[in-house]
Length: 161
Image (cartoon, rainbow, N blue to C red):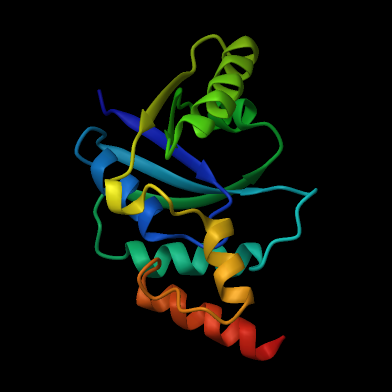
């Protein structure tokens, strides 16, 4: 039986830290669906279509990866996909508290769910999409934090605003 997992996130934008977690998770799982979560309460920098495009571009060439999106409850999405393993990243102890609460709530809603946590490589331990957005907002260089394609999309977005 194939080991399949879903890696949900906003990926606004996808960072090298996200990519690191995906690459490391591919060593454990036979297939990973990277799924963009639509959060109606947040105003993203990039549209859903742009985020999916960036993921497809930066992950092209990697085998056993699917790109998808969803809105609503993660557990309902997992049930629909018939998958019970979720991948989450932990950068710092502050992430652990939040992710622990989310994992426990998800298990309350779906008893068969398993959450697998990955710590990024140390060089990405500070990195988040919000850090990238903040730096980009003030005109900083994010080229060491994101794939070149994403850096270009950020520059284009910044210019068009």
